[in-house]
Image 1: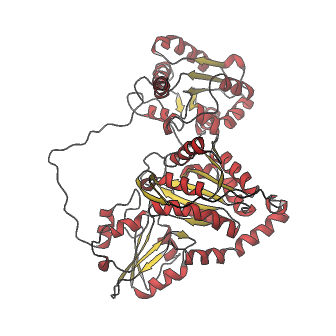
Image 2: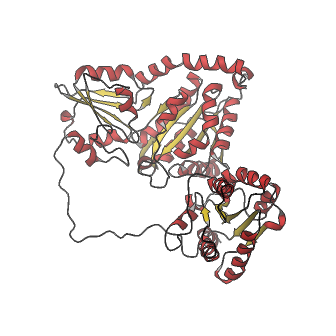
Image 3: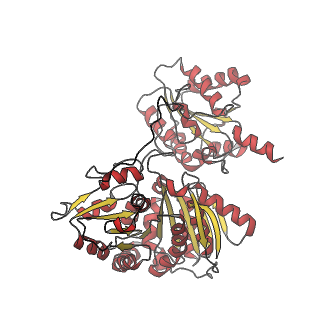
Length: 532
């Protein structure tokens, strides 16, 4: 056994390595990025397995699926909205099953610290009818990662681990166990992995037949625990994930804790829930994210003989993160004393682009050009450049999901918007922007796409990008954009007039044009200089 101080993400990564990992795949996305960063560092130091950043989450999932087909153990990790991108192979992986252990880590972001929505990945696990773990602490994150591969191979299905930001990005002590060897090669059967209807119908029956076994596995999981304090209590608590910690933080004496069921695995352990319900009249459900357990308890018409409290009842906040204080209020306990800071006003500083950021020069030039076009709309995308929506730039009008800038600009142009401009980063373009650009090129849509090429996945820490520089130019050309309307600019103050001239020319062109604003991320430039 060894002792470590690890982020929650790192604990998951180390657990996977010690489970006999052969391949890990991911696309950067907070709060999941540190899983792959840890694995790459570990691989570079000790070797023994593969760990790759991929062009998007769908590709990452499918590469992991290929490892599982080969009979070996694979992990794919992403943030919650990344699971939307990977939903096609994710759902179908429940149909193919897993030959070698296949673990899917989805890191949710309650409170939307760096995301465009709040989303609860437990619903995806329920949708696909697969087993899911939800750790409450870093030690469980490590142990669940190790154990998930065994469960996956036992039931022949992928297994999900659901993380949340507060656990992913905090550190704690972790005790690790000895590592196991990797699985030998063992090809999957074509009848399982070729989802023709005749095979898929058989696989669906297997998936449905497996549900009682997964409930039984959840019932006996060592990570679920039902505790009674020995005294009769009107109220019982069901807590999952970090919610379990917030409950315990409100009791200094363990004997004062009401009957408490800790849920750490799904499908819900029905028998354990039933034992708690038999002993209490009222249930408080404490869970991070959506009211998943609460809704499952109440069903469509609720439990008429039990009072269920939680997010739906208003006793806990429906959005954002839980806290020990919000749980304390739901428990009906006296609020703890708080220090009051008189005349203290926190700095109201919104996030902003770094000083010297190439995106800043791109937006400045674009804003000046568009002053002559009162009907213009700038459709943007997900990346550092999304901060162009805020002052002092106020340069963009939309940001929905990866690649949507190009698709929405085409739809906007089709509807009569002129000029329709899309701004998208090099990594986001590779992730999901190429397909809509192919669509726009086929129609020669009257729109201008500005690809902000800073040669990095800068928003999440500078991970490598797959389309930058000359390669990016050739990709755009290969998608069918006329070469004479693919323009490269260098976003620097000294080039402002020339850059504005090029932007005006391409916006005036009655058809598709692409401008590549090419300059390395200022932070990556600094890193490179420091490393010399």
